[in-house]
View 1 (tube, helix red, strand yellow):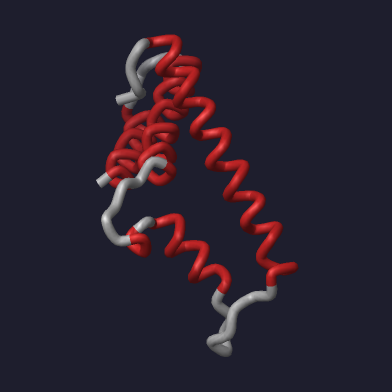
View 2 (cartoon, one colour):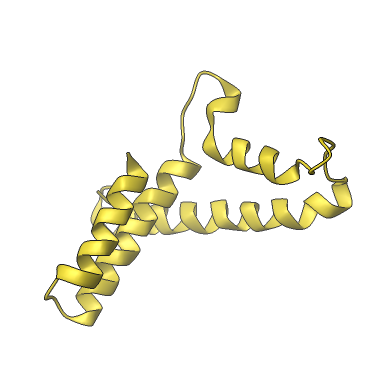
Length: 103
């Protein structure tokens, strides 16, 4: 559901919206942040239903069915770690500034 919202908001901002560039940028950033926060803050009973875990697992899978070595996978995991950190930091700043998460 969050991906549909992201696509719709970005499409509207690019093709339909008559607001200024700075307002459109704010809408785009907030929409992306909401989507990213849903990925980072995903709650599930089953550990493998998390979309980030599934993506990392599939990314580590090679064509022959084996998995990447740790040296090959570590740079990928570092990128995801920084992604999670920046999304969490931005969400915390938004909550601190506005008193509620981005909607």
